[in-house]
Image (cartoon, rainbow, N blue to C red; front, top):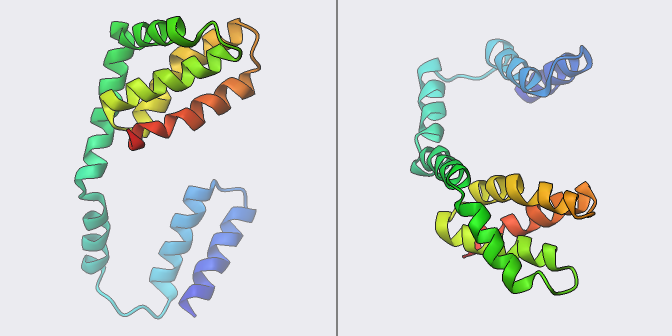
Length: 151
């Protein structure tokens, strides 16, 4: 019965035009209020905080800060220029430069999120200026951003 209330409230709120996040929250609250859950609200709060109390979640903003500092300091542009010197003369060279930049940058940060965000700020405008379609530049950057967790 609780699952039915959850999904019914979610879809009703979604069809009413609410954003997905608010529809999910409304469905969850409806299931808590009118469902047959027999658990104290303090336990729900503890479980919510336990999921958010993670060192991995705490490190993501710091990786993004490191990426932004490297980007503003010009390190990302320098890495891109070194990669362009190595691979720029090859066919599809700027795509290879994108991957090489993400590879080096992934070794520096270790975060795929920071890697993709920072390399995208530098490489997508450069690739667009040289005639690559924006969708292709974004796809290459997103694919090469996964190197951050592999390196």
